[in-house]
Amino acid sequence: MQPVHPLPAEGSVFFDARGDGRALRASWHHESGVVVLSLWRDNVCTGSFRLAVDEVPALVELLRRGLDTAYDATRERRDASSA
Image 1 (cartoon, rainbow, N blue to C red):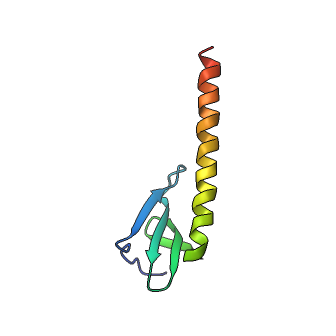
Image 2: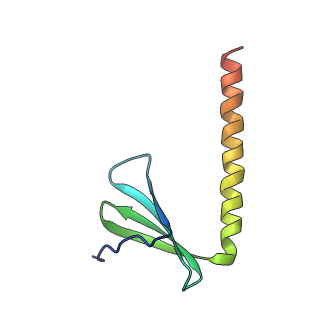
Image 3: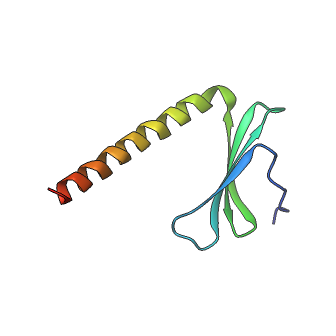
């Protein structure tokens, strides 16, 4: 079992919608030129992925496009239900 390390100053924790102690940690590691995405179950890291800094914009763009689509779908459902 890996020891738990504190999240770096530039990082966030996102809790899984399923609950059960699942979380995603995203943290910048400028000294290594990566963003680390790690999966946690309670206080245990179950996996990690190192994304090179030059690939971060593509990930952000993917998330942005998905968010736009989700907002559009929600707006369409809301408009359809109020018609």
